[in-house]
Length: 179
Image 1 (cartoon, one colour):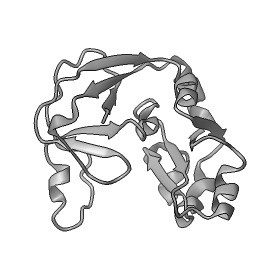
Image 2: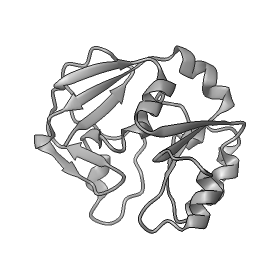
Image 3: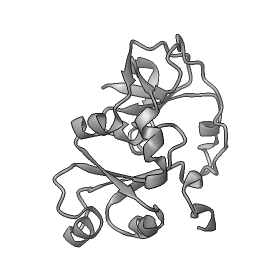
Image 4: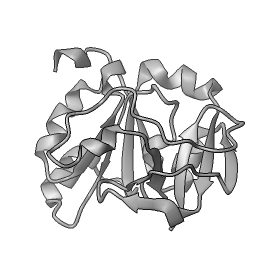
């Protein structure tokens, strides 16, 4: 199992557990997820973080329960395993941004069984780091089709479909605060 953490900081020697910046509403018994943790993502789901940290994005992929009509409506005829949608207004920033993919030994991490997310309650030293400065190329290598949209708002209905949809930093998407 390969686990990763993405950052714009190229010099992290050790990741210390820390609480989330914006605590989320958690179901009973899961409040500890707002506490001090080191967060990681598994290899299959890492395309969700192949973007500058604050870039709003929606990633879609089929599940075994995905209906053909939902796949066609939201993903079209693509052969990509995943579709990543961002707003046009972020495209210039993608061209100049650099991020670093840190890899961890999975020994101290536990799965959240939620879209590839893993956490460790202990400090974690990276075993490797890779500089990423060509997002489109990296997404393509991961089997992800990147789509540039004027707005992410037309995708609001995808959460009612049978596809998996992950929205990240949507608070930064134009007009999203209304929803």
